[in-house]
Length: 123
Image (cartoon, rainbow, N blue to C red; front, side, top):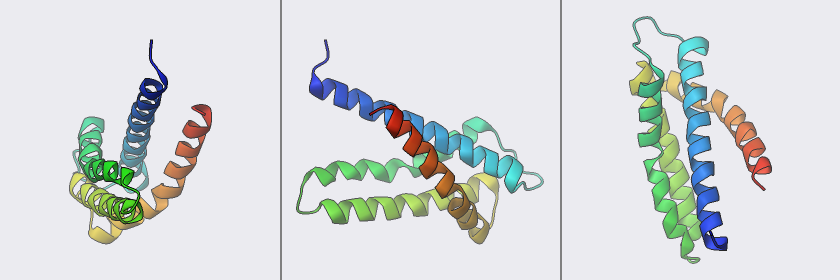
């Protein structure tokens, strides 16, 4: 039987996997249908792999458990993830940097709305 802490950790794992899946599907859709580039060998696994590497700086948020540095850690981690996701788009899709940043800006509201729904379901 899982205690309260076990359920909280399980919930965080589910949210992490679901958010990664949503982000990967959204990125693949943007790369394949919204901003297609000729000659790009785009596959769902390659996009999912690039996205998971781009999310790696989010592991630093564990340091947010220290109240004194929490705002700095969260801001730095989010900024680093935006930069790495833009780089992942650039390299995975063979896009220019402005096109990668534009796709991130266009996709971000869709991602936020999708995560809002996921979190409301898991309440």
